[in-house]
Amino acid sequence: MNRKHMQWLAFTLLKLCALMVVAVLFVIIFDIASKGAGAISWEFLTEAPKNHMTQGGIFPAIWGTLLLSIGAILLAFPTGVLTAIYLTEYSAQSRTIIFIDAAITNLAGVPSIVFGLFGFALFVAFFGFGASMLAGSLTLALMVLPIIIKTSEEALLSVPHSFREASLALGATKWQTVRHSVLPYAVPGLLTGLILGVSRAAGETAPILFTAAAYFLPSLPSSVFDQTMALPYHLYILSTQSFNLKATEHLQYGTALVLLGLVLALNLAAIIVRSHFRRKYRW
Amino acid sequence: MIHSRDVNLWYGRKQVLFDVTLDILANCTTSLIGPSGCGKTSFLRCINRMNDIIHSCRVSGEIRVGGIEVYSPKTDVVMLRKKVGMVFQVPNPFPKSIYENVAYGPMIHGKNDRRKLDAVVERSLREAALWDEVKDDLQKSAMELSGGQKQRLCIARALSIEPEVLLMDEPCSALDPIATAKIEDLINKLKEKYTVVIVTHNIQQAARISDYTAYFYLGKIIEFGKTSEMFEKPKEKSTEMYLTGRFG
Ligand SMILES: Nc1ncnc2c1ncn2[C@@H]1O[C@H](COP(=O)(O)OP(=O)(O)OP(=O)(O)O)[C@@H](O)[C@H]1O
Ligand SMILES: [Mg+2]
Image 1: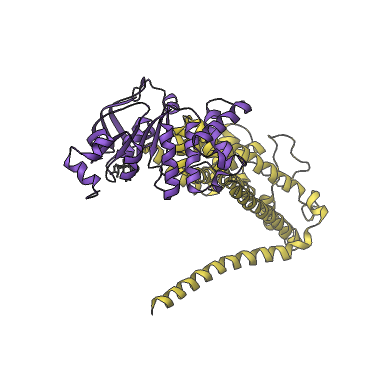
Image 2: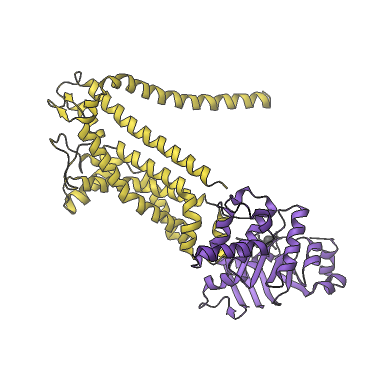
């Protein structure tokens, strides 16, 4: 086999792999969309479940998921970005820093149920927040924090070193340099991390299982100490605990479709934001 | 203006500068020449303590710029760098407008009055011989300038904070002969107001623009003196070989 054939073979294999990933994604989306589209209606999106979840909508779950994810990101994003700034811009490459960095990488790989149990022990039981939106958001925040730190670090490191040198050489302090010559150019990457964090927080069940999620609530939560319904948990109940699984199948797929739509929309937003800022600051 | 005494510099365990002692006069251009890797950049970056940001770098010895003890623990690096501007080998403008690039320094140092900033931007761009080419469109992105214009913009940016010393690390190495000639003209004018220290690989360039020349070899200063004298009659064999292009 000569080099040309080899090249052809390699590229074909790579192309097949890429196609397979895309195909799987489309099969999932198509399957859920085709089975769930029928359930989507104005009422489904704006009303509460009725008759022991066999009818009605999922609005409380949508609302709860939005609040939980926003709460999680409000806590995790500033903390994560500041941590990343500290780790990349301020600290010398000491052993402690390398250790912290490795710890964060490992934290990103911890199963979400572990975060759930930890959140339960710490926020629900120890701090006494009870099962509540606060405890749920805190737990989700802990879970997405490593993701946000890692993407932020990457975003900061992708800003050319020469910008920092130029700024420092003009007599800027380290903070001024970070503030004016690093952060603005890292914005696309930081926002990518933010949106990935939101979509991860929106989709996870395990962290809120013991810390925030309620099976059914007659009214929307009115304070951060209230429990809330949430989309992924609602989906889990609909498909495991319903009186009549067959009768609620369209509701399950409808819920899955809404959740999927939410996450895909967030990822799409990440892509748009990123390309917008890429165009604004090009170097 | 700049006095260096027994400066030694290490990157980790590797020593790169050995007892560098050098006196640079005010309002003169001094070139640092020598073969690649001999420590010219390292020495230049000692003068405004840009080596601080390289974690493995350690410096001993004494450097004074004007009245400032560069390596004294009491020295405010910000004030030092305000006095000692730097232009890098590869033009590195910020991806902002021309105006914002030049106004960056003054704004960092607390100048926010729009009219004063306008004046600083114009003065700096004029001193960097760029004003006539860009005056009609100061809001244009600096990334759209040519290589030579970018480098003059970086010079203007360095001049914007009115330094006393200007350090230039091979400012022409990324430029064509015409852009190089422009920058050389510029350097000849700058020395009326500033003390210029320039690293160059181009021996003819050193001869054309500098009053004094220091020849570095393997981290030591082999020879230092008036450019005209050194180029006519080098005292050291090594200098002669480098100047005549027999190694380096
Ligand atoms: N950040 C660094 N870490 C470790 N070693 C370095 C670093 N920077 C430079 N060196 C080493 O120090 C020595 C001197 O480098 P320097 O950049 O000062 O040389 P130079 O005279 O400017 O060379 P050139 O003419 O090629 O620019 C080289 O051997 C180089 O490998
Ligand atoms: Mg160099």
